[in-house]
Amino acid sequence: MTGAPKQTTPLVGELVIANISKIMPFGAYCKLPEYNNLEVFLPIKEVSSGWIKNIHEYIHEGQKVVCKVVYFDKERQTLDVSIKKVTPQDSKNKINIYNLEKRLSGMFMQGVKQAGLDAQKDDLSLAVIAEFRTYTELMRNATDDTPAFVSSKLPKKLKDTLMKLLETSKKKKRYIVSYIMKLSTFNTKSGATELREILTTIKGKGVEVLYIGAPRYRLSAEGKDYNDAEGKIKAAQEVVTAKLKKGVFEIEKEKLKKDKEDIMATL
Image (cartoon, rainbow, N blue to C red; front, side, top):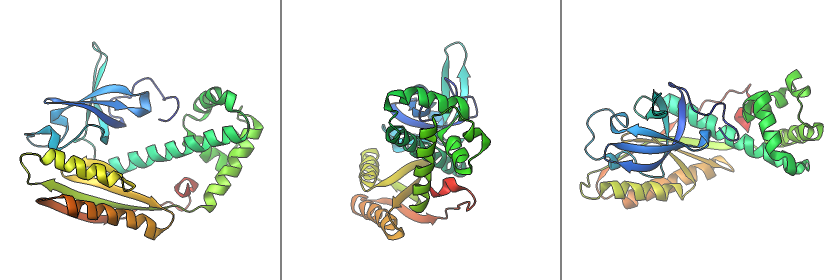
């Protein structure tokens, strides 16, 4: 979670965002941005179902993935995580929650600055976590002007500023498109490098890439309007077409469901 975490380590069974930092023949070390970059281990058997000949064909360093915590070693105080035990729907939900929390954390800091409370930003962040646990819950309460928000110990000028920022955000509609991509290569010599270059170039086009499970990835793009968002996906497709020498490339649009009653979906 952006800001202070709910606890020092995630619980077994919990979904987490993981950044792959170092790949070994027997697995990969990952860091959890929601838990102050806590290091965890991803065993090779938890990367994908079936036998894996070359782990680099499935994951690469710097990649962001959704994992499930599957084991806690009390003696060593270490955690193991799994990719293969995360369903596509769980992966989608987790990344949406994570991105929303990041955006609302940024909005909170913007509110702190506009209210002239920069010197107190660390204490105010801790106060939010203590009262509301997440920035998302803070903003939900602010949107509904709940008794919890009204009676919050946060400074009144900060609460007023946050209300104004939320109102402004509601007027700025965001356009998001999402696609499921199947991507694999027949290149047996340097296929891992080829795929890594393709995915890195796609990210440079403003497209979020999330590994679901070989050979599937979720591509999502946000734009000032629908055509802008779709244009980024089209640019990503052109990258694959140009760079994939021999392999499999399929892409299908994913339907995004929005809860019209939930103001957070508009932020």
